[in-house]
Image (cartoon, rainbow, N blue to C red; front, side, top):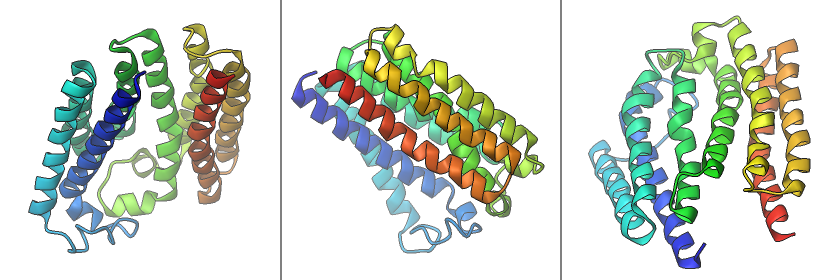
Length: 251
């Protein structure tokens, strides 16, 4: 991948992510004000004007698409625009309407990874869908553990998160385990599609099994502490996976 294209792709992706995040804060500012975890954010705290934040957010997303289309490729720009639309107009409103919002949100959450692949190759290949699948599976235990830790807060904000709708935790634990288990074979797909080699394959399997183990620990003791262990594992998982890919590529 050309270094210049890589730089433009990273800039465009960063602008899109920043713009979407800003617009999401605008849309949810009233609900964020009711939650302890988010009440100090600039918009609910009244430090930033919502109209100005909206305008800047729209500008950033448009700038991202305007950069990606001519300087990377049209496909990557389309995926960036699709990510913004799905996140803001599908996932965001569904967070207060259905317990399936987290599952639906994995699509816009994983599209940027697919966009990285299309930026490098110019096409939707099997390697790109493999990376998309990895990010989609990873998000479920990551966000469900967070939702479990802050379920009372989400309830105050009127969010229909799974741990709020089903507070006993059976469904939360099953989905965390199920998607963490699915992540193990999914993470091997880059090897099967020749997007990665054996070094990555040897390292990513035990990494995934360790992540899966933390979800079983949570199922045995459904506490905030055990959910935090899953969350920490998920935060470490992605950079570890990327490190394996880099080592595999350089070696």
